[in-house]
Length: 474
Image 1 (cartoon, rainbow, N blue to C red):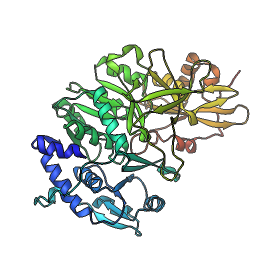
Image 2: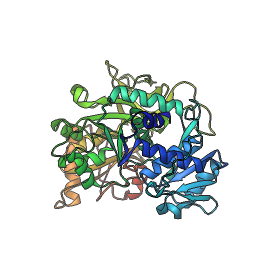
Image 3: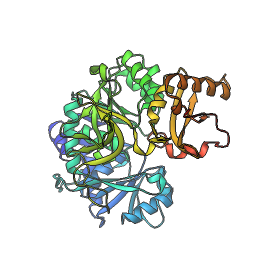
Image 4: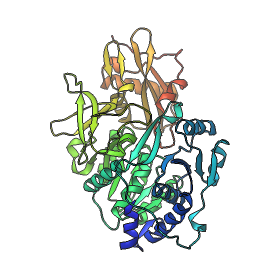
């Protein structure tokens, strides 16, 4: 938080968010904090779409030492009520658009737009220094399943992250980070904190607009972006020129054809691996500087370590992380001592680069053989015309589990039967026979959540398991 005050003191006229400079944002944060300090709650929550106003309220709530639960805008009022109840929160700050999602049992306070805030600067009576163990924000993971875990993001984690991230990504005074990912997600919140620490600008978009993003890129208005692969896959063919310095790319598996296309265009993608529990980015690789490591996600950020636990004969095992960015444990659950088990599977090469194979829960064990969905997905993505795909395990009476493939394609002239035959032949030619999916489902688009990730757990509901199309260990 002291980074904002430092900016107001040393470069007050420098752009901070959109058209607002550091003094504007500082004044707005102090103004809102003056109102929020009267709230008796230790914890409060915010539900809003991305905006400068939302960022101001988040910072103001943090300034008055509130633990801020950032609510996913895709939740229903009932789901939100459940989260508030379990975390003992009674106050919800909300944008006008999200008022209907606030449970009637909660105290609702509507966000006042920064454009209409009083220009009378409130007296700054606040302590801008925070203990590393203080909780700045709370994010609930897997909330859409009804069974969520609450991640406390502490100031020590945030400070360690922004410092290490700057070492890896660098900094220039011209930096302007485009925020299209949601602020209620760690990818959005980390952009806010990195930019304040760096004393640089950010451009916050309320919702994703591809045409607007392309305009920002082509005009040189932004030079840094955080994206998920799905968004970049659609953007990349349309980028004709740019002044981009960093494209931080993560959130889900990155198809190799997308990486290759970015290399051809010299797009500065930084593959990254992280999660809410590590305050986003914890392993990163600048692709253009590591062309011999294109399938890796890179090396740990300074201060972080990666361990492979219970490796098999090939060195493949559970990915564990340790370091100052790792949380101390979920709220109301057993604390974490030592390594954090990511539940991902992968390996380290001889140079210390990390390779992700799959989530442990996505691993398919079929007739005693391990099948990594990512290997099948990478094979399918290599085919021309494939827009997106995902492989999940489904139960099978004979083999225990078999792979099921879901995909969407560009070519609308082919029948589903023709597409399936072509895909099946390609996989069978490239991979072992037991890896050929038993089920193939052609879809218009795969279901995704608010951050663009494929909702793998919901895919099985689309599957017609009465009409299998082959697959064998023979």
